[in-house]
Length: 362
Ligand SMILES: Cc1ncc(COP(=O)(O)O)c(C=O)c1O
Image (cartoon, rainbow, N blue to C red; front, side, top):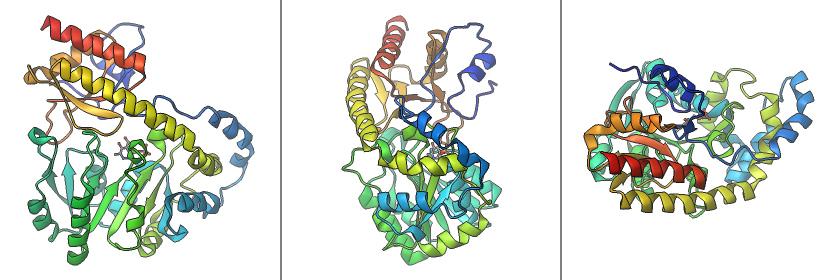
């Protein structure tokens, strides 16, 4: 049995695992970060704030929190800055320690890990892979009444699909009646067109919603570690007490307001994504591949003509210098799809030409 790595973005580990002896640099389609980031000004700005590392950060991170609150149109007491989206996930899970959860799957693996860590009993509810990853709502609504929390990723990793807003509202309303919380991870929200806003304006009406965010993906800063959690102040106060002191470092605290102000970087990214995802979709359809109805910067791929040969396709791509993300450890996918990032025009073209080759040769 092959040992598959747990996360994407590890081309060197993949090389070792598959014993690939080449110095050739792999094109990494397995990580779902913005290929344009970080914004070009960030390096100088971090350098300018170098001195801040000699001091403890402001424990309330007031400037960054204020910038996030303004950006999201919520109050500062609705916000808790976190050490990446990952800390936001673990803090949210802590709130339901020893409780009962639903995780809507296939999705990001850390919800399950966080639930296990806090002894939360988990029931998985699956999207239908044969139906564009839609969900049977009546069954979920029935089940949520007996649970403390539902974890849902929107846009969802790894499918890239966006849970319909009307359905989510129904969940949140049913949850409110039943005393069930809905945790929505919006780590990839910034990649959606501005016509699909955050749910942050729901916080005021729904005390049972917890929103998780990350700046990692849009700004390509997985090493900086910054995210935040938005919820009713009563939840924020509890979680603040659970958080490790100075969880956010002073360099990040110094640059959060600048990152949020840089709207042109986000707009530029969205324009690229719109253009490239159209191009990739058109080409994949013409080559008879399945592409999940993703709205963000990655998608699930399957060879419609040979759905059982995904592992061979993974290896074929690797032999041609392209690393994708296997789906062996995503519930309900069983390795039958590959998760692939949308990258620059030139890189997408290289990927598509290898997929064309696979089509011609197999
Ligand atoms: C859906 C989702 N949420 C959260 C995270 C974690 O982000 P961060 O690096 O900010 O902790 C990831 C990272 O892959 C993710 O895919």
